Length: 428
Image 1: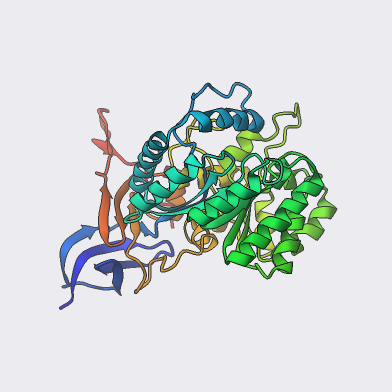
Image 2 (image 1 turned 45 degrees about the vertical axis):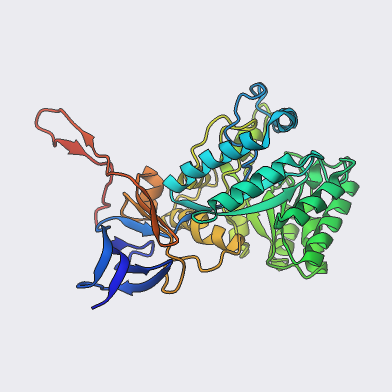
């Protein structure tokens, strides 16, 4: 008779399999019919979805939960947000940034979000942002995987100490190279910045994640240069282009050339639907562009695409909860991914696809992998997207880190049931 530290019984996996999961220490040690096994703790997941943890491939943790400081973004634009953040990063202390980030990580854990890639602004010479986020990374390490990207928010070349500070951040322990070529002074400077940033990553053996063409300008085409540098330096599979919003304005003929280049370079794409559709198109009257890149077209070309959160309660975005299902829910609407297969893919985009973009090791519900998972009050991935339901239990690295009671509404209606749950089975 097998004995486990934790036994999750009767859960429904994303592929529809109903099974038990046995956990010993930090690892999944058995999956299947484990009836009769003993465990230190048994979690009844019968009728509930058991999924690998959610993963966010694009976030700004140094700015999170700072909304309204020093003031509110009145125009709602990307550029005003950058200006506001430029003021805030000079006022915010290391302790304040750490406190805000840890609070956000608490939210994330409660939602089953157990891996985050966060861009850290390397513009200020004091690099308090980097000091703070490295401290957060170490403090959450037992339960949340936090990747940090060295991000020269005001430009790698445009800022006098942009190159120097990015190198300092990498030397301090930041593990991914970032950039923002469309914010350099000229298109040529943007291409030069990409060349140098990719060379730094190649020399150090690091991953690359570039804020790329986050603009309505159809002539912002740095993704083409990024694809070239990726192939030139042999970085295939190690590079991500975040946002790529200019692609929604590009000529279709040019895109027909561009997509194969991205696919050949094995670049991953990270659109951020909540923020992209909020910040883009601000100069349009009607028709008004919505700012989401060409998700389905990229997927049809075999390009890996994952949904990102980007912002929660910061100078760019006043809302947000940290729930990756909110992100996928918005994404499927704006990208019109409404067939059953496409909706299920949206769930995969905030779990397995994002995990691959981050190069996470030992991720997923398989024997031998890290014992990290989430039990949701939903029957399948599509229902999870529809409801964005309670996370009944979150397990991280073999430990239960969050619990939530099933929260059915109580009714007081004559002739109707005493309680209601918004789950709904599709007739067979």
